[in-house]
Length: 272
Image (tube, rainbow, N blue to C red; front, top):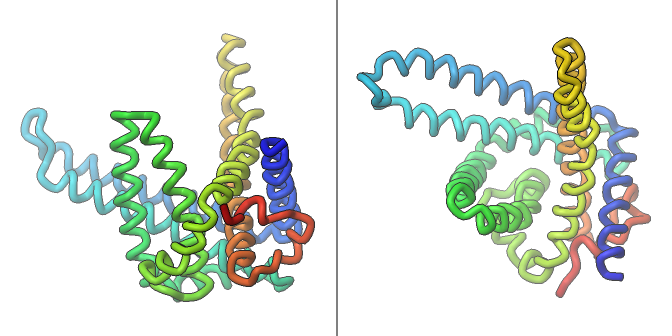
């Protein structure tokens, strides 16, 4: 019964987040802008790599290659975090019954730009370490990845909505995490499950394109499949930001935000 209660709560969280997004479509713009700006940064990194690599002697890499790669990595993490912060700021307004805007989100994230940088450095280093572990020990790496997502889930809303620094935000969320670790996994993993399911039709279309073994059909189906997965990923990012903000409001105020009134958020964040 506990499993089905957990699954039901996750489904309610997913549906409610989707209703909020449907009524406040401006929120989906932030993941789109995140993807576009990240792509521009990656394109710049590739272009710079093309310039640097010919300078290599034989099979060795030029001295600047790894520093540039590291800087590019942290720039991408910062870009993603910036737009996530913008989304959270406007999701909070939507949950309070206000009118979110893209300009308002950009302004809020810009004002907190300096406070985001230490958190970006922390998340970037931790994520890189986890990726390195996952390459060598996949099971442990995946466990650490989920654990880190749970740990960091409420830090960014605290930075954005309370205008705190990264260290102060971590300290403020530490007590909540200590008392609610197990159930916080429900919210993070449960919503991730249902948003992940959104991509399945796209995967199915790509598979159909491959098995048809007809070049024209393969191209069309694969193209539609890729677009579907891209759209599903954008929607999933927006839904995650909405729930992330709602859960933060619940932990701070002790009150369920209006649109989530029918959802038992205690199942997503509950003391042991």
